[in-house]
Image 1 (cartoon, rainbow, N blue to C red):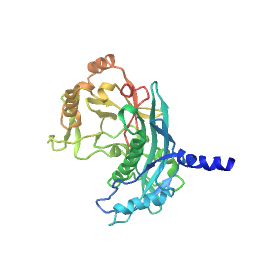
Image 2 (cartoon, rainbow, N blue to C red; image 1 turned 90 degrees about the vertical axis):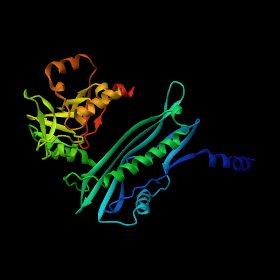
Image 3 (cartoon, rainbow, N blue to C red; image 1 turned 180 degrees about the horizontal axis):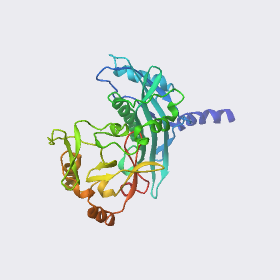
Length: 341
């Protein structure tokens, strides 16, 4: 009787566990054919990704094959028949999913950290990193488990494709240092070692971190010495180019959609004090004005630096400490940032 009962229940045990597979199907083609290979460095302490629910049924999220290094290598080969000499590495640092209870139901949550490197002469050079912390609500997704798996695949594809065109930081890392790459690199970047900053205009964060201002651009001021924008050294300033920051008299200013704000530094790194409305304007007119003011080179931004307007600015908004990532220049938003509510 016991044997018959076990035999009867066996199919139920087999079907009890459901899986949502992460399928690596998106293109990671290197259009310039410089890439020779892609190797996965799986540095996760816990390889179990987690479980999320669809219509109250739990699904374990996992990659479609157990041998991840071969899975990534095959993925690269599928889209890169013509190859060059560059060896790329994708380091998976953290990947977790889970169910998070809400008042009425449950939402899915994804946390992922990944980074890419170029290997030359047995040394690794940092290219890019992605940090994802995202909620998936039932009302927004018909199938949360599929949405999460698709997003993981999409983010991995994106960071790999972007890495082909990124110029690496010229700071070599040994195989032992690669797992602590953020600390090792930031300690050697000129931005953390030079004081004061080098005056000039910086088109992107990498040039700012390396303190290498653009030779074709200079800060534009009015007769009172107030910053009004940027211009080319030949005084022709009708350019449609974004800039990351400007430095004037050793003081760095970060370009945001509506203005520029002084970049400050504390024990945790660089940051700006900014309101939600300034960083993410809700009004389209404000966004366009901000782009014309400084996002598009040659605009007017003098009021931002003016002492009186700065005082009024601080009296009329709620300000947050928004960090600037040491390696990418991306914003690190605080948990209580208004836009996240």
